[in-house]
Amino acid sequence: MASSSQKLTSACFVVLLIFVVCVLTTTKIRNIELSRSRKLKTEDSQSFNSSTIATRLQGIEWNEHAVSDPDKVAHELSALIHMSEQNNIARRKLGFFTCGNGNLIDDCWRCDHNWHKNRKHLADCGIGFGSKAIGGRDGRFYVVTDHTDEDVVNPTPGTLRHAVIQVEPLWIVFKSDMVINLKQELIMNSFKTIDARGANVHIANGACITIQYITNVIIHGLHIHDCKKTGNTKVISSPSQAGWRDLADGDAINIFGSSHIWIDHNSLSNCTDGLVDVVQGSTAITISNNHFTHHDEVMLLGHKDSYTQDKMMQVTIAYNHFGEGLKQRMPRCRHGYFHVVNNDYTHWEMYAIGGSANPTINSQGNRYAALFAKEVTKRVDTEASEWKKWNWRSEGDILVNGAFFIPSGEGASESYAHALSLTPRPASMVDSITSTAGALGCRIDKPCY
Ligand SMILES: *[C@@H]1O[C@H](CO)[C@@H](O)[C@H](O)[C@H]1NC(C)=O
Ligand SMILES: *[C@@H]1O[C@H](CO)[C@@H](O)[C@H](O)[C@H]1NC(C)=O
Image (cartoon, rainbow, N blue to C red):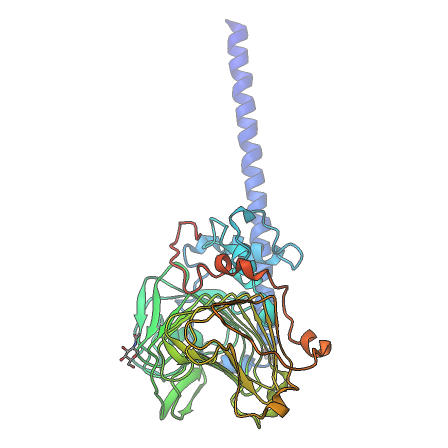
């Protein structure tokens, strides 16, 4: 009897000891984590403070919509640490590639069942000339809760307009499905990600997106359609600035004098002017995984033959589906270097790839399926004696139903080196690579594949 009671006592002692050790360890870990989080936050605010735009911060009210995590504030710590641990070597080695289909971008994040808890990982999945765009990766989350756009000079907190004009980096997400009817152009500020994954978000029937004289923007997962001409009024572009806007063309996305921009997985259709226009010295841009439909002049890369600053322009057009109801300009290029890689072209009424002013066009691993016009290419308003010198090549493209691509140039390797931004996959993979082009229908707490 005595020995059994002794055993019980020593068992109790062991349990108590384990409990004490556990409590001590937990406290210690929490302290380490807290100091780490404080350190990260301090570093954040210091680097922000020292930036040249610091003065523009004056007068910004504390923004209750900029929370640390769209799901739960408690995730902030893990998000911060997760981010700080990422680096270029480790970034793609997450070990969940079994669902991959050869789409380098999607294979980087979509197989992660916790994609919505690791939203900012998307910023490390870019490819091509715009792959360095980090968007709002180093900032807080901002949850858009309000679909309205009543006041374009003093936007209401919780609206998309209030989010995109802020000076601080922000990763913008949406609380619910919504249709946003913009009264005027949405003039974005630098270091923003608009991440519509998990919600069905339409920007439609009004003004659309303007990316002007800024840098580091990611736009992912939006439906943008039926954009109209707006303007001739004052519109806010940063917390300290609201300026006069002339008449806007009615583009879905207009990129003007900007760099490090990544437009991924959007569904774009039926606008007054272009679906994506990239002009006025913009460069380091990737337009990927989008679904384009029902539109005449789809994509303009360089707006004027005389605007020679566009000679530095580098744009990657990859993994897009140019689909139903398209007529021309997929894209129409001027001056710069254009890598058109692994896209699916199923509908062009006039031409797919066009240009003027000696652009370099590197078309690799695309599928061009003719339905109306058979010729893929078009040189705009230029004599053959002139355009025969332009470097346009088709390499590993699949041409279906009589489609043909007229190449030109001497095959100058130096030129194509400037128009090469990623390793093309075989064109036979285009079907699987582009099968989910456009906004994805993914839902929170569900896998996204
Ligand atoms: C930020 O910069 C201002 C002016 O340069 C300075 O007065 C302030 O102390 C700085 N704040 C931090 C947190 O470093
Ligand atoms: C495109 O927009 C016009 C009006 O701007 C409308 O009449 C037409 O039905 C739209 N087309 C599609 C396919 O939605």
